[in-house]
Length: 143
Image 1: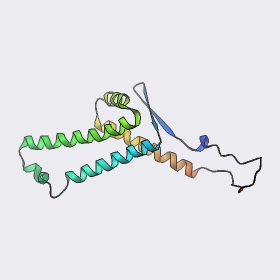
Image 2: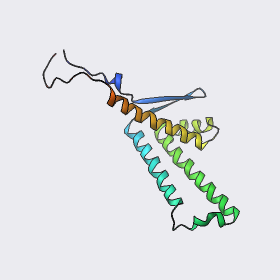
Image 3: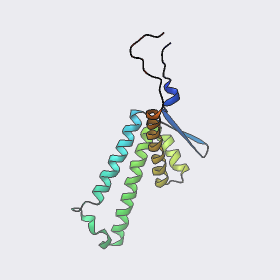
Image 4: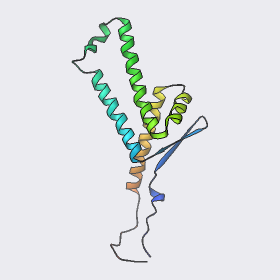
């Protein structure tokens, strides 16, 4: 008898979230990991760009109100674009737009869900690492 490890018991490969009667399935695939990485890199790069000392917007609070409003609106639009890119890549455009609509068009809501997906993915890996497996008996054929 061989020691068979049933990965179904220890490795989650997806997470379903339901909201307002709609189910959103996030698969823990390379595609999802790339989308998470893309969102993280874009968000950090954009934050760095906003806080760059050489940027003319350093004194934004000293600029006319309309310039300040435009600066804030552009930043919020960029945050929304980054979040939506993640959801379009992982669950498709139609589902991403539905989720955004169901969240009352809240980018903060999208960021919250993105955080939940990231935590679920990390937990799946941690749970698989912490699971107990049968002892490996080398290359012996125990059939």
